[in-house]
Length: 397
Image (cartoon, rainbow, N blue to C red; front, side):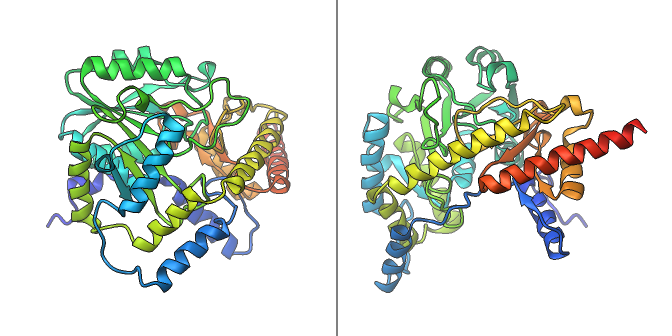
């Protein structure tokens, strides 16, 4: 008897969590591990946010609420959107969700039928591909290139469009590459979506994490239609507020589409916990100084990691403009992405992600997350270098 559905057999999950599980197992065995594999800020959630949640719990905010989210949260989110993206969405354009992963699921499920197509970058965040395949939709992957700083080329996207294309997903700053698209590139992608009458989902989870040396800074395609016709903004508190475990975010889009996504949320999880939403309100209303300090610390760590990686023979790393990942080229080491990552975990005690986890174009690269102390970053780089030297000596003997 067949027990597992075809859709379930297509699920890939987030394989970096599988590396984390293996690293944790090694730690339980007594091995010291330096973690560069998972995109989880090592900072604590700011205390004012935690206290807002606790106060909400003490006040009894532990019951069902409107599935689409607290009106107070939506109003604050709309105000922040006006400040950051120069338009104020209507409240029925905003849906409060348990993080951004599920926003991707809701968006694809409510815009695309089985057999139709969604365009995604390659390499890209692993959930895109897994969700698309689970829903019986075809992922159409547009290659990113190191010579272009891993930015998505609008001309390549346009060539990939067919009569079955229903959605384009862009991600700037990006996971896994840290690349930041220019205003011109973003505008062209919106124009392509407008011309072809398809949806454009802009994954802006790392929007607050753009460094001063970025030539363009943050720019969202949503300014062109104010999320009223085809653009959607995916947003989460996980990275910028060090709230990965809280599972809270909000997606903005066309009101008719958001209404359907709200019904899907209502069907699958009823609502997002009100006390978590109260914490998110405080995150937006409270002082942003801790966030600014955190981003500045990430910039310092990025510089240390990029400099260190570029001193390792066979490794070449461009400097990303946003997020907290680097995506170095390791082809000259003679190892595949998975061979390199396995070697570092098992011999060096350094956990990193193979680039091919993020798409075919990621082969020959690895992803490291610098959400770790500068001391650990330096130590991790030294261990990678030493392990490669030992490996190369063994190969040459």
